[in-house]
Length: 244
Image (cartoon, rainbow, N blue to C red; front, side):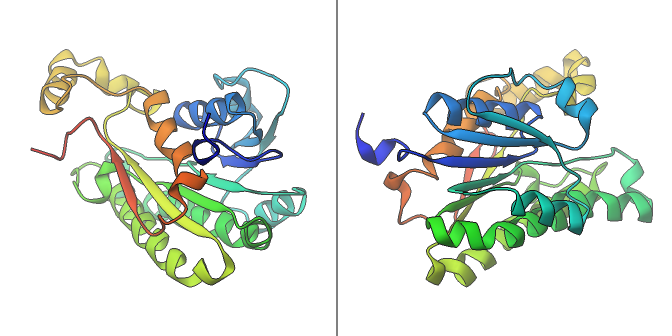
């Protein structure tokens, strides 16, 4: 394999939210590529229900990204970080019109991303590493039932661009991946509505929903030497949903 499309020896990735469906696929791909991975879930229950299987090179840790102290302690416990992937996220359909819920979603999805980025900045600068934030198609295509989620993911896109400009001098690249409709636990209930599921599938170029492992490849690429001139960019992985 070309060195441009592989990970250097000793590569260590931190996948915040790695216990989730997309996070687990990202963590698994990094491991398959020879990296070691520290993956997190919000609590032990999240870790227990994760699709991630115990294997050599993988460490699982509970982490509440809304806690400054917890994030700082987690970062302090890492010896190295070549890639930081932020994919911890929540949504609350219809309830996001309540101020407390709106603030909670932003604290996890947007401020939580900023917390981890700033906490890992010294390690990333030392490694000349990469940050990949998981945004969403809903950063540009709004949905009426999840205003906080849409706002938070729009914020993640602009945070990505701002940090890319701010930290380029330290050798840190900052990019984002924006998934479309991917089959995960967060949308499982909605997919039980066959008309809803089919309507979305028909809007895509491939006439189907995406799978978590189809997001992982874009994340890994943005951490490889082949993408070394890419920073401040957002890669859509939406099956062509927004193309037409």
